[in-house]
Amino acid sequence: MNKKGFIFDLDGVIVDTAKYHFLAWQNLAKSIGIDFTHEQNEQLKGVSRVKSLEKILEWGNKTISEELFASLMGKKNEEYLSFIEKMTDEEVLPDVPKILAYLIAQKQPISLGSASKNARPILEKVNLLSKFDAIVDGNDVSKAKPDPEVFLIAAQHLNMKPEDCIVFEDSVAGVQAANTANMISIGIGERNVLHEADYIFSDFTEIENSFIQELINR
Ligand code: BG6
Ligand code: MG
Image (cartoon, rainbow, N blue to C red; front, side, top):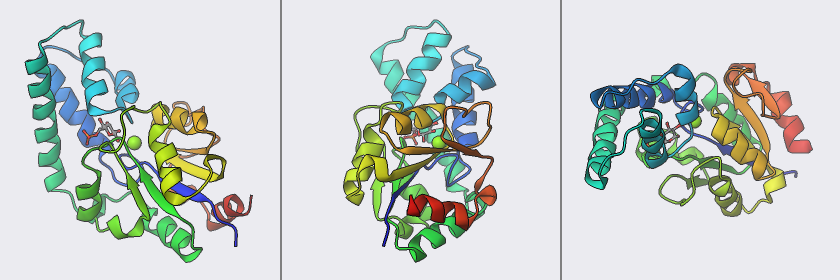
């Protein structure tokens, strides 16, 4: 039986949390007198918490002490977690359970490949943790996307070669990471943003089982 490694990003792919990251960063940036645009936010997607704050400070031309940096990171995560607390499995993105069920029925190995340090509690909250054979998240990596580290570790956990892995991503950094890892990249989101991906869909409702089956048979 053919097997491929299926690797899913979390925020903006499995759950609708990208909007909460954006809100929390926007509020934090505002609190230190920095505004940032929708285009700049696209550059924060997929990027680690530390790197995100570094970028925001760079855009705002601000240098701050290490202590303040650490406290701002804490503040952002606190607000983000307050949004997550109220989250239910209704915020699982459309047809995600369907694609996971199909992959499980076809006995395909599945991993998470996320930059988030909050990945496990979020997957638990929406009752999807048990669907994954491996979880690789922000606690396991030292290099942020677009570095391919997170996906290469996921491939190792699944016992698959990188070229036999398929990555679902909503961020430019994540698509670049998948491409650098020599994996098939599937962008979930806007075509004009994710044009570097091998395939692009608005969301999982556009992905037929036959397409997944073709990937498995490649
Ligand atoms: C990524 C998000 O999945 O995780 C980023 O796209 C976020 O927006 C990053 O900054 C880190 O997440 P967390 O939950 O560890 O702050
Ligand atoms: Mg994402």
